Image 1 (spheres, rainbow, N blue to C red):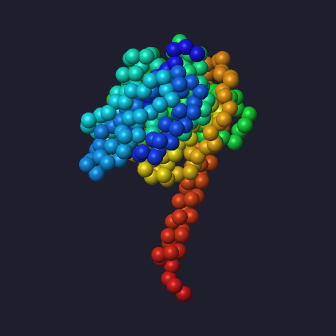
Image 2 (spheres, rainbow, N blue to C red):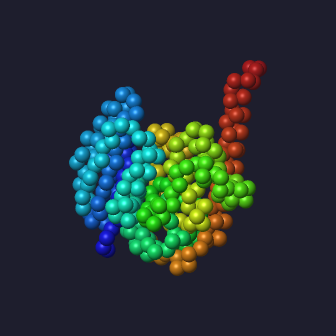
Image 3 (cartoon, one colour):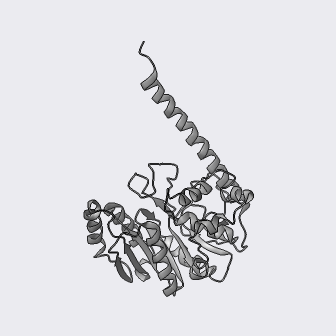
Length: 306
């Protein structure tokens, strides 16, 4: 396979997560033919400097790739600006990019999947994003890969032609939504995507991903996804910038190469129903767990001892 996409890996202050992420990337087919660019953000506070230094020591001697370039930030940009700047630079230089963060374990077939999809849909304007993560869906009748509206951020790829439509201005994005679009964007209210937009505007989060998804959605773009996840996020242990301790998104990484890609460029209705059902059940499960937790607290602290 010629003209492989460069890999951007964004790291900060989690040496063990970074080590595991790199270890799984090194085991990927095509790793030894791929250029790896590691973006290391600067420490936010003096207290975090030691961990940042530990990560930088780890990434100073990475092998298993065609080439490795480490870009160390002097100041702290934050995850959003780091990713936006890094992706912008690499798509400018190479026309496409594969993106990983420091808490993602990958299938050995992940790079192969990304590169084949990047080549296959290079000139399909409507296809704007390739995701490697997928929820643990119970509907096993789904095709190997399918198009959908959501842009997942745990292992992804894109082209310069799509990234040029990334709109970082939250006001410009939100101004294009009406009630119907908000419902479609939030998968009929089963996900809190619109709330994430509102929270970004209020300064309560600094998500690049929600703005990228919104940019794709408003352009009428589609994302390619595998029915069996090629990535697992190990950051839901409370260590990440935007992560919570949560098992909902735990998946079994597929150990099979992706062979089939959709010929028709349209959203897969079957996948939409499967995802909507998963998210609806997840939402109900979270509410139920919250009610159980509140009940336990009441019993523990407010019930008078007999």
